[in-house]
Length: 232
Image (cartoon, rainbow, N blue to C red; front, side):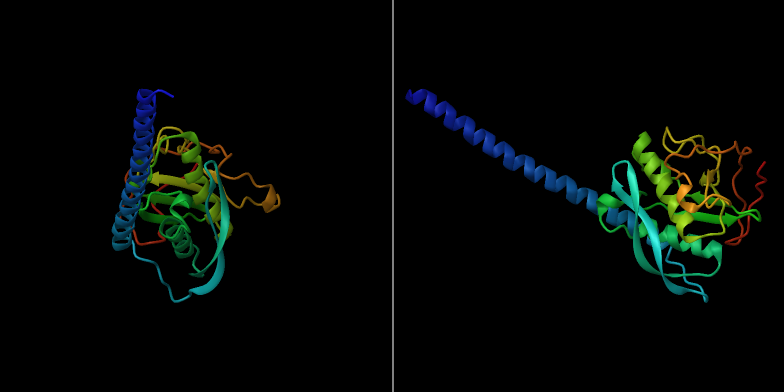
């Protein structure tokens, strides 16, 4: 092999090696930045929304639905102190969903998302009011948005038996979509009476069952007090 060719091959080999090292370092740096942002988001959320404790709390095995794949969530059974009050119980399981994913890859909700309010109307309609972070800090896409809504709906469905359907608001307002794709103008069925639970469609495949009335900012109310929303 000519000497010049050997030199060129050697230079190219060194360049490829350096490129691989740089790529690996860049990947690690991006991963650390993402973890730092998640930690900062969690810290902000925990200051604004500390864990909820009530006199009726009892430790039980709760099923929290975190990501199992890019387009699917699955239950993880964990022990949580949960309230006998359905509103506080719902807040506790949603808090766990946001705050304690087993790994960063299993997260379905942005770390600094806050559940601003949770209300249950007499007929079992649950209204969950989230901070702007749920929409503004979530990657737009049909699969990722479905995953977020599905994880919320199925976590509530598995742990709060009295809720029948779910309405999601963003900062007290009804919005058309989560981040451009999943329709939030209606309701998602939870724990419907009649058919066995196993036959209930998840929010991942559910279509909001009806159009909600135009929403206005929620008035300041005590936790668990239903806002002035009249479903049709």
